[in-house]
Length: 467
Image 1 (cartoon, rainbow, N blue to C red):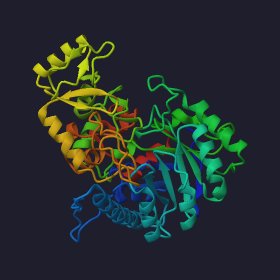
Image 2: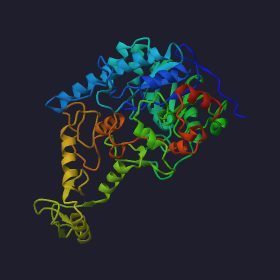
Image 3: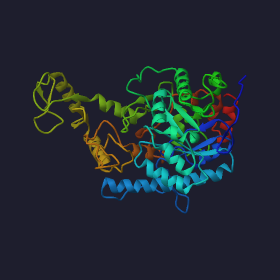
């Protein structure tokens, strides 16, 4: 029999140590996070380009009018602040004084710092804490301290936490409520897989979390600071040996994928329907994201098309050199493209199949695509609104001269477009569908039998039983 969880004190009240994972763009909003808090947990509003509403309650489309990327970036920041404030206020009202409301931001999203300031300034007393990952958010603690809210950094290793602690967090130790360990092989969305780790060889999360707690203890972090296990958590009974475990200390659990399939979940019905069809292995850990980070998403036709595009790739030289002895005669204009004889034959086959346009990448390679694909890639790059601090796809950065200095990478995609589209009802097969690697359980867990879709309260109650 599952021994159960004990409430913890967070945000000045008792809550269940269950955190709703914040999922942007607009996959976690006021309805889901407010309901999660109302059920006694810690709800998380995604503050990544969140939705605002008109007087009739309709979502205001985030349309950009600026002539330059810098102008559109400023529009994005205004949209993000207005949407974040609106979502927090609505979530706080739904919570009704129960649980707690956090907000989640990506440190590498464009304008992360002004957006955080803008939201926290206008929601004083409503936000209990800020979760933040996707990068190394050194200034998170300093910003949280300005508004007297807790901060919960998201890391994927003890090493990352140590760096953050030594550089900044030790100065604001009292406001660090938890450290979220996001497992890079299990969690959905972006993660912190390092170059030293093999994406094809998953590691057991227990020793990694144990090492994180040992590092925290060595640095003098209070035992009251929770470690939040995020990624792959479905049945709490599977994690029973983590609870009340002196090696790990205080443990909470984050659920990102399961709350997607609830009555309050804001994602469109088409996305919900697809979740129930996911099979083991259907979620792919990949590196197509323009952030440069690994991320996990459903291997749908959109992701498969990115895989195929990268497979239609050959290295080239601008002059005959080494093995590059054949002059490329398809997909490019001009004669200064030299490839191997074998790659010349591959390029000719792709050209015959309709992939008649070759685009340069930052790695001195060419990828072959159709003219329609090329047109879409170039339009999306030109329409960039600066949603990331550094974007590999458009070569944008959100400071200095607004350019990374590298060639824009056609092997990636506009992540703002793909996430906004799927969150607001566009074709799920043509956009990015984030999910954790345990999502196949939607099709095997008897809780969802006969098409049952729970309320958030029913889901939280179910989780607390161990199931």
